[in-house]
Structures are given as C-alpha cells and as structure tokens.
Image (cartoon, rainbow, N blue to C red):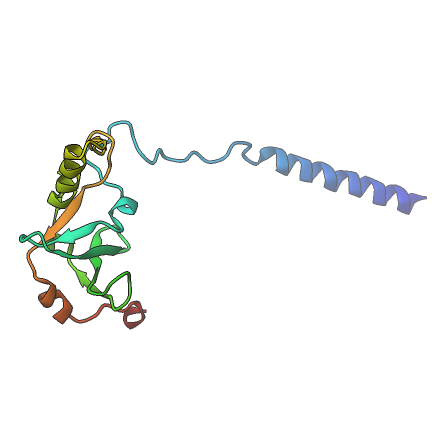
Length: 163
C-alpha cells in the first residue's frame, strides 16, 4: 500500500509541475508587424500580376510581343522581364529576357485600341469604357526601342538554363 501511495503522490506532483509549466507559457501569439503601414502610398503602384500579358510595342507602333514573366531577386528587386516574341498564337514564339529599364510603361490607351474605339463610335456601337486611372493598377502597354528582328536575334531565354 505504501508503494501505491508513493506512486500516486509522485504522479500528482509531476502533474502539478507540468500544469505550472504550461501556465507559465505565453498565452498570446507573438505580434505580427503590419505588412502595409498606413503611411505607405500605393497611388502609383502597379500590380505585377497585371503586367503579365501586357503588349510591348516599339516606337513605330509595331507589336513586338508581350510580357510573359517578371523575374525578381531574393530582395524583391526586378532582375528581368521575359518577353515572348515572334510566333502566332503561342506557336513559334520564343522568350527573351530584358532589363526593366529597357521598357517604358504607358498608361494612355494604345493607338490600335483608340482606332477600334473610334470605329465603334462611328458605326453607332457603344465605345469601350474609359480607363479608370485611379483604380486601374496597371499600365496600358509598354514601349521598347527595338525591332522584331533585333529581338528575334537575341538569345532565347530558357528557364532550364538557369536552374
């Protein structure tokens, strides 16, 4: 009987120590710093997801291709923009990587879109809605100083070459 009492007493003692240790652990989760402080201004920000698929033209308004990917370094800085050039409906297209500073992003509607809007207006159909610059979060198109032939001559960008 003494052994049973000793075992019960030690079990109770161990349980009370464990309860004390649990009670001393913090009951609240650690605080998380605010990810976007109220002091940050997002008025002129663009969403990266909206840049994918953006048409790229040259100064002569010839369509060069479209943005397929944006590559970032580990600090979040844009390393390169991958543009799909050539091809038709994705066939025969090849990707090239250019630095972000090679592109100039424009928010005004591209001439080809304006011409289509004017055509609809003259035929009596409803013109497309105007861009809402305050909430759009994306430019309309990009311009690059290059020709299609110059871009097609660049080395093709392949993700497998950099893994």
